Length: 250
Image 1 (cartoon, rainbow, N blue to C red):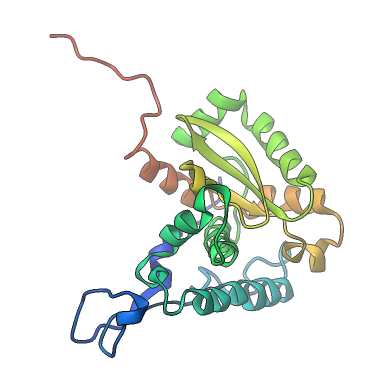
Image 2: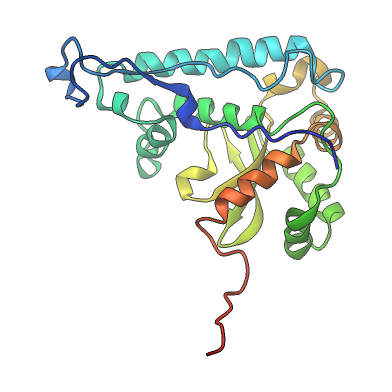
């Protein structure tokens, strides 16, 4: 297994309040000087722009993170300004603006901002390979073997039509591979995401052109941060029972 350290980003790290006299929120019509206002900022990467080379180039990071990701955050700020969404975290905006499958205006930018933050912390220099411990045991339980999981995950990423994402999630206490198009994210269905690979063209085209299967293979073999995935699994266990409950004898 790789020697990466865990880098568990939180959607709350995007959020900053400017507190004035009052700590209560108001509706846009009642907003005045001193009322806290939320604004999101582009979270720093957990590594340098050139740290993922040669597998993901600095040039790709400059465009993907520095331009695409930044644009999602900047556009989201414009969309939520003077609205009730200013009181919410990024994750809350994603879930609320999904609006039961009838997305509101901020959804695409909020979803893309959340997904990208999750993606960057899913990677690390010197990553990839086979995970260990409980995570590996669960993969073997739910997919048969790590090799079977890896093959299915790569295939899911390679065959997703158009732009989107491929995820490893906990769904009903079972590891499952999920594909989502555009800005959709598993948190809108209350799944627990553990890993994601971005399969929008801007994630790989400068380095791999149209060879998305090659991109998927390189990511899995060299960049996945299994330490972060393990930490996400530990957090998920606070909300979901991964095994059969045992009742102690009296």
